[in-house]
Image 1 (tube, rainbow over the protein chains, first blue to last red):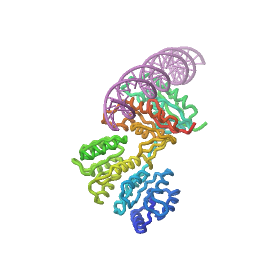
Image 2 (image 1 turned 180 degrees about the vertical axis):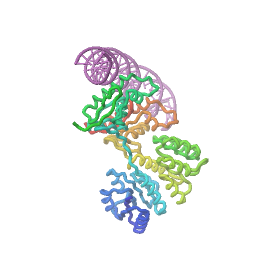
Image 3 (image 1 turned 45 degrees about the horizontal axis):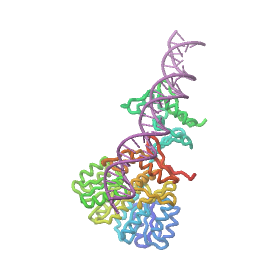
Length: 225
Length: 225
DNA sequence: CCGGGAGGAGGCGCATCCTCATCGTTTCGT
DNA sequence: ACGAAACGATGAGGATGCGCCTCCTCCCGG
């Protein structure tokens, strides 16, 4: 992991660098606030450890600038002052944690671990078939770049078909999945109706709903032509 | 946001519940360690605040069990002991932060905010969508330069919607997040009502709440027009 | 005692759903 | 090869569920 340390006290800085190096991290160390801000403009780190009192620019100011540019990198502040107001404002500007000097090294290490561990990306659940793209969480469907408005049943049906392209679903399967079993299900004709609407709305896409006469329907993606 | 509090001291518990309720969060409060562990087995929270000293089961033990089941929910430990060893081991078991009693309420609130924020991958307390700007710590909302007065529930609802623009939230989702599960929740009608009020108050903003019939609501930012 | 927030009741209007009826198409039997 | 029957596509229109809005009540804090 890449760690960026901004700390003007020599002893403390050296100790931290050495400590993290020993457990396998890469630490870039900067002593000047101004220079640190510049480095942060174009380098991405997994963790930033920031002293508040600095020559050039305060830690608060660096943090502020960092967040203003949209960075979400975890930041751990080091502060000598222990007043509640300072600590609160550090957290509110966007620090993820802070530590009051003097601190125990084991504690710094533990907190750093907690922050590094916490990095996790968010999985998007997109379902794609040909150039049809279904965003399940937004209940939105796109064909290429074009947004297509689908109703609830339409999306549900498309979702089922697109989840297993090539697989043939009987009308009964589809009815069962779109409506519950218990419910008084509508006629097969309803399925045909929705298939029709979907075909119309998805016209021109690089995938289509193919009728398998006597069996049901299937999604078939294909190249442009 | 949904918060789970495990704390056996009556005064402290009541104070925390009330405090967070005032700023629009839902707090479920449990005094017994054993019971808390059971609740956590099948309920998901945005934040868990955990006292170390508890009847039934210690906070450490609850945390351990929680992490063993794969939960990544943010956990804030409350401890009377301030020895470094304890604090370090709390963090290593998987706590995200801790606070030593007695603590300042503003600090608890700030730390809780930081954890809740981080859970959603955001770095700042400012939440923006189109030209709507929500200051979570101040519970204030601006549209462009104009200050808009929103009630507690309104802010909470807007916060949820704006935190994931484009994502569709069902009325049930929204009810669950604004109120707890166990509480006697109001009807879906309430959600529609608040949506209506929000729309009125946010009129003219470069983002709007769109109805996705049959599914729920979503925030959609858009350019001026 | 008053003002504002919360939320229930119920009516209105429309998008969505589904049935019915009709028309086109494929697949057979002869 | 021809016609009939089964199957699927499509269009029209009625029913209704869903969402929105307008009162109105209750409750809490000042």
